Length: 302
Image (cartoon, rainbow, N blue to C red):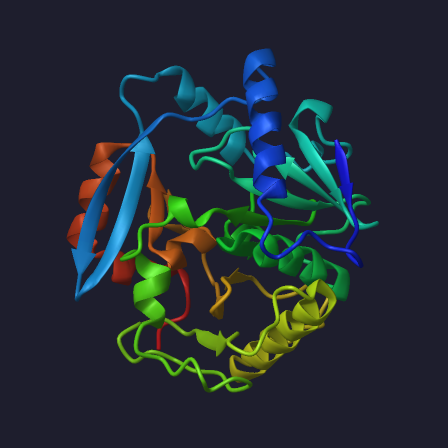
C-alpha cells in the first residue's frame, strides 16, 4: 500500500493512483476479496437527456446475493474500520484511505474513507474536500457523496466515492445536465430550467487542480455557496440528506427527501445519468415513468 500526502499530492498529470488501483484490483480478484457484480445495461432517453440503466445480469445469479449484501442496512457492521487490507489502495494524507468498492458495478470504483469513524451525515470537512480534490486533480473523473441513507448511502461510516471518466458516457446526465450553463460564472449558483428537481450547479473553471490544498478550498467554497442557494445548512450535524457530485468542470448539489422511487434506490450517480436496478421489470417501470420524473420524486420538485 502506498502513502500519498494531502500536502504533497499526486501530480495532476499522473496516472499513479489508477495504476496502483489496477494492481490492487488484480490482487484482490485473485484472492476473492474483490467481488464485482456483473451487469447488463441499456440507455433511456427523455427530453434530450440520456440515462444509462444497469441491472444485475440474469446470467449471474450469485450477484443477486452480492447486491443484497450491499443494500442491507446493518448499522452494527462497519467494513471501513478497518477496511480489508486486500482492498486498500493507498493512504491519502493523514485522515483518509483509498479503498476499492468490494462489490463494484463500475470498474475502478474507489472509496475515499475516513480513517477514524465519522458519520455519513456529518458535515464535510476541509480534509474531506482536499482528499476529493487530490483524486479529481490527478485522475479527473467524477467524485460523489451520498449524504446519509436517504440520499442512497449504504454505510454509515463517512466515505466519498469516485469513478473514472471512462465509466460515464459523454452524453450521460452529468455532462448533458450541465450543458448550456455558463462555465465562466464562477462563484455563483446556477440552475438548469429543464431539470425538474431542486439543484445548484457551481462552475469550477477557476480551480487549479494541480494545487490540492487550494482546490479543496475552492470545492468547499463552491459546496457552501450551492448549499446556501438551496437553503441547506452546510455545517449542520447531522446534515439534511443531499447528493454531491464534482468533476473538474462542475460541482452539483441536490437535496433529497426519499431514498427510493417505488422500490428503486437512487444514489448520487442518478444525477449523473446512471441508474441501477435489480431487474428488467424495474427498467420498464422507470421507462414508463421517465428517468427525470424518478429523479424529481426522490429529490424536491421545482
